[in-house]
Length: 264
Image (cartoon, helix red, strand yellow):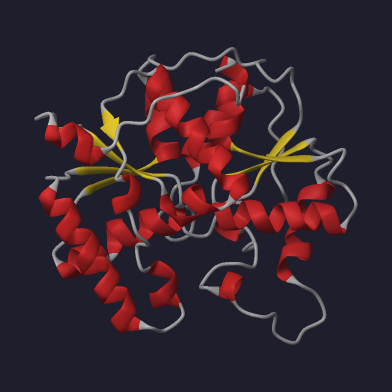
């Protein structure tokens, strides 16, 4: 499915032609630089193209939201990065932002308004769920042949923004065999990467958090662990490798599963 070419509109090119897209698709650092998460960005772009959504990316003009800097305690760097982004958004008259990273979603939605950046921020799981509800996206429920799937709740979607039902609605449209982990929704365990933990050395302790969470997933005996965050994907994949389960159990993002089901 990755061989089919897609054209990604760039905001500067559209504006030069006098066009103004409805949505800014914010790719994020992981979607731009991490080889594994580039596939997720590509998958969501395929979904947007399939649905004929009027969107564009910033391309080379996109920088970091400043979230990692703020979580790590560098408030000045955060504000510099945020103000730079707000000026770019102002230049392109951005009103609606689509994100594939919960950390980008959270900071745009909840923290940028303090600096004057107020937008309609939509996480991609919300967007896909809405397209399923309005009938624009139609998937056979047995698309994944009743394969057992479990879902890991990202902290910045779940506890931070109460997005619990949307990803489950998406998975229920794909399979009749959604298996919940014992700790799920507001009781779900963090993958271990949140709060800029991803960028620092592990602290002293008896066990890594990502291993504890990977064990939660393995107990379900599901064949696919579905994630909706670049940090969660990295940590869960590492957990599968550590447990020598990466050949029999796969970690896919929700957008990738939609693309597989639609054969895009």
